Image 1: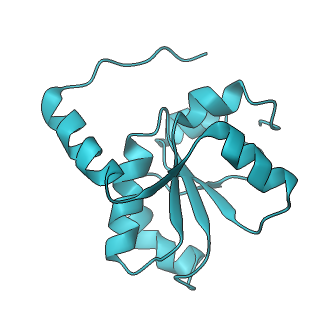
Image 2: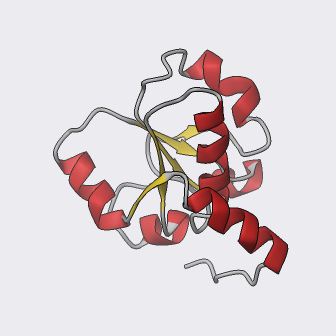
Image 3: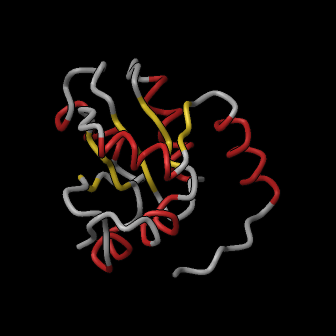
Length: 125
């Protein structure tokens, strides 16, 4: 399991603001969504090296550095349900907020991110 990073106060303030404006789910809610066969796309917003080291089976990789540039090509319908994850739920909240500003209406940040997913029992690659 990846250890939790210590983050700077300015970053945390930015993340907390984003989290107040985006939908979030916990890992158990996400597992229920998967078990129910709810249509969605899982997006990994971590860096290339993080994704290469391991990710959820079937996840689409659109790192935080390029998601705004490439999301409309990958998901042209702004009503597509997109569940975003990163290492712990911070970068995914920031990315979810950016996508909302781009008129994506069904974006969710997975709180707990990769750390929660590793312990979830969901298939990993």
